[in-house]
Amino acid sequence: MIKNLNRLAHPVFLISLLILLLNDLFLKTVFHNYLTGKLSDFAGLVVFPFFWSVLFPKRIKEIHIATVLFFCFWKSHFSESFVDLFGFYRIVDFSDTIALVSVLVSFQLLKKDPIVYKVQPVFLKFIFLLSSFSFIATTREPEPYKFENGFLYLNLKNDSDQKIVIDIDCKFSEEEITFYKNQEIKTALTSHKKFISEHEEEYKLVYDPLDSVRIVKEISDEWQLRKKNNVTDPLVLDKGTEQYVVLPLHSNDTLVGFPKDFKIAILDTDWKPLKIYDKKAFFSTIQNKGLNEFSRRDAFNLTFGKKKEPLNIADAYGKWESRGKGDFSKMEINSDYFVDDSNGKVYDCNYTNDSLWVHYSRYKWYLAKIKKVTKDRLVISWDNKPDRVYTKSKKPTVLGR
Image (cartoon, rainbow, N blue to C red; front, top):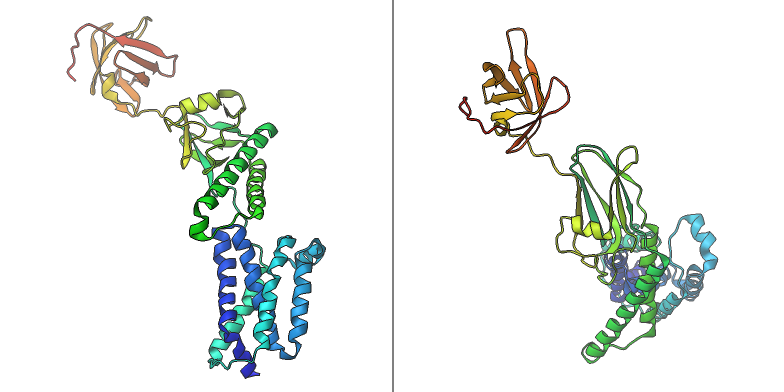
């Protein structure tokens, strides 16, 4: 029995086992293409019957026949109930039966007189465990492909003074999908045929009609993915926050533009429109200057509102006049004093952020909320009363800066 188990050290079996594990655990995830889809079938159909034939050497023929029959069943729609019952994973593709040639390879290797490999028991146990794991890994469902992978991001930022709701419509019409999909398929097929014609001698390439089937399927599958993810739920952004969304635009498809009816609606929390960006307005507003709907970068950036610059109190220093009558219609201020120009009296004052406190007497003071200040204009709300607008006075100041 030990002598027969040593056959698990056969180079062809070990290489096939390594390819099977490498493909299932790494290559399929990274490349996810036609080759990686077939590689596991070819390698697995060497490993599986060879492994069980070593364990049951008197049933080699029966094991290989059963492998062929079960693989045909496994790759057909008839196995659907069986797969669901045990929670297995597989792709229904009867063209995979081309890999059954590997069963013949396994059978021929076992028919030959066994070569005695001097293998340590520990190494044999390791091979045994790896083989058992490979059969489980092959039927394990791969990590789901995330829509984010390879698609464009739109970074949204709220620099306004209120909470906003953002509703994005990036849905392609059926006419647009048909147009862009056919365009991509035509371009991909042309590029593929051109590559083969230019390198057929160098790499021994031959055009295979199945390549066209694969290309059409890959592009069609990607458009199905877009259709499932072209509508995003409205999102809420608090003041000063940002968030990204994924657009149904792949970073590689420079032939695909934004949908004709692309729209971003900025709403308040009562769902009243504040701003609507169509495709033209979007590209004139984003921070990525110079980009258009066919540009492909890591992300597009859209900021709503203008970030409020911190108030510089010193900009409010000087002499000001307002049209209205009453207290403080004409005044002058600096960092420590306030002058009421209607009577010429000078009062102490101090600031807390954007608030000006005027100490009118020992028991009386006024609070001025500075709303806005520019070179020639000052807006103040005195004691929470309606805003009063001041303009810069041309009269000379009496207070120092």
